[in-house]
Image 1 (cartoon, rainbow, N blue to C red):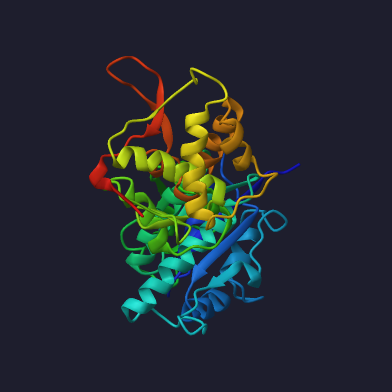
Image 2: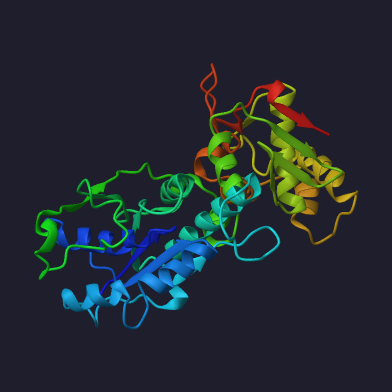
Length: 362
């Protein structure tokens, strides 16, 4: 089965960057990255130029390129592969004229790369050539956010005198006129820093804005800021809400409260099992979160009557940490997860490794 390879290219008013990039990919040493599909990210004006210059049935240079290099059955560039950014009001973005347009373009590029990268069987090669400079920046950053091992980023370089010629699209095998046999088209590979593993899982599977993705990455470098509102049933870390059930929120609030009051973590494994003291402490937080509602068959009711056992403790701790990582990503969640805390006495304890001033609980 032929591997799926997508070329993701930017295009503004110079769509020849697409065929130049294709030519550069064919000329690379070693195994060539021959895309099975070409996806062009552009504006409404750019799309008109792409249709006219590349896809015209007679004059389209994409069709000429495929015939010249015997690729007619191997490259796919269809009208549905030309993706046009939308303005805030939902209309096709004509060009980038304002900050609102710039934000819309950033979100559009970020979301397109995220969506294309969802399929693990597709390898991406993104080209920064084409479009406005900000578009190239956003594409490069989107590849850092969502790129995977095996994905590539490049910029196409063309010999001086040819890069600005509106009639030059690629070196043709039979063309020896006007010195075009000496033209060089090559790709400069651009290594990118992968940050995909730092993003929450829902950022990889659901549409999110460019600014939200940047916020997640930046937050990992900022001081911790944790707010737990038991009455409001809300946990907010670094400005990001984390969804938890009443039981998990109460368990986390219990741990966070101990850090806030400098009580330290919870000794584990329990000296006595089940631990009646821990069971009573936890149920007080559960009542505060649930509004005093306790069901007879609820696990928390057994904690109050019988004490907390090791299994209940471990299950809740694991689920709390999973909820934090799903919402914050691995790197940012590390600030807030429940973990082993070393003590001077060498007693194994679990808690939140935060200073009291980094915590607000009510």
